[in-house]
Every structure is written in C-alpha cells, then in structure tokens.
Image 1 (tube, rainbow, N blue to C red):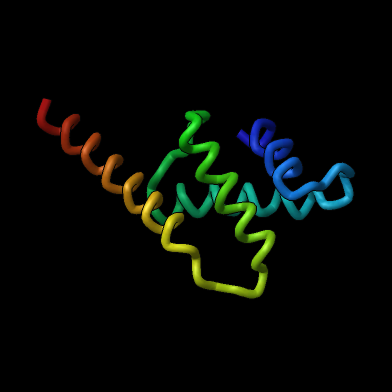
Image 2 (cartoon, rainbow, N blue to C red):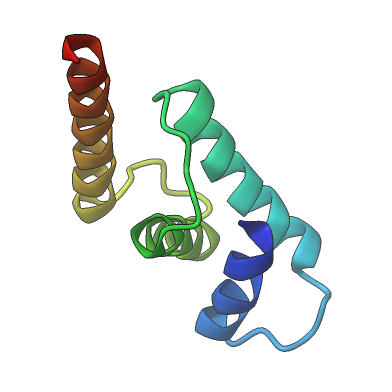
Length: 94
C-alpha cells in the first residue's frame, strides 16, 4: 500500500525530492498501524482506503502540532469501523 500512497502524497504536497521520504513513510505506516491495532481495520488497496490514508497523511503532515483529527476523517474512520462490524456480523450469521 505504501508504494501506491507515497507518490500520491508527494504529488499532493508538491514534494519532488526524496528528502522527506522517511517522514512521509512514517506517517503512512503510522496511520495503517493505528487502523489495524487500535480500530481493528485491515486496510486494503481499495481506492477508498488509499484515499483515506492519503487524506489523513496529508493532514498530519500539514498540521504536526494539532492533535484534533478533522471531522471528515473521523467520519470516514467510523464508517469503516461500522462496515467491518457489519461484515463480522454477517459472517457469524451464515
């Protein structure tokens, strides 16, 4: 997933060199890890998952001192949690 998100993130931020790659990779890895370990969401290479990580990483890069995640990202995260729970419930029923 990193291989797809990194060039998109760099393009969105207007970064054309590799100087910030370690920081950007850490942001992407941190978001993917938080989704998995904190919220139980396994992110795939689906377009909506890629855009979610891209949007969140962009925001984190541009607001390093701000701890409040934007409502649009919170809303999308909650929707993914609900979808995950619905899939789990469906598999338990069938």
